Image (tube, rainbow, N blue to C red):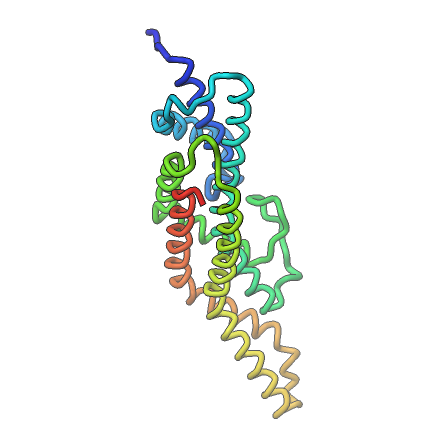
Length: 251
């Protein structure tokens, strides 16, 4: 069996593979280290095969210098779009970090094999919950759909850097707001708990309430986190929708 593939189609596939591979390397949940490299390569190749027909043959440079330049641009575009998803998704981990700071768990940091960094206890917990929800709710398919539309919004020439910089600033603002929204219920109750313990220690010093402060924080955080899990579900859905819309429009 023989396949007749033109040079333009082969070059278009290479450009699509460059953007897709860069996006898969950075974008959650595909960038998770629990996913084998072979699987990520297979995902990038499969997406590239589907996306190649979306590239206009006339826009593919045939000269060496033009093609190398377009290849570099596609890698940068893929990294930029992947960073948008990563920034949105990191809001969940940041929410867990805020809870750790408030509860005093920052000293109990551990190595996270999925990111290769030291993370706090609830930061890793919220990150695991978010990834699980992303697969259970098929949110990753929404991200893939948004990425495929980026080939219509962002041509081979690349992103408009002026508008992309402004969009990154907007994404950073959304990141901070989303992290606060997710962590706010637990932080608010912890704050009230600290006030209650302070008042109780002032009213009855003989109780030595601050000797029990840390166990009380642990009990409050564990109970509230279990109750607040339903609040994480719509938050993750909202973040996935924002990320998919952002990469679909190319920033």
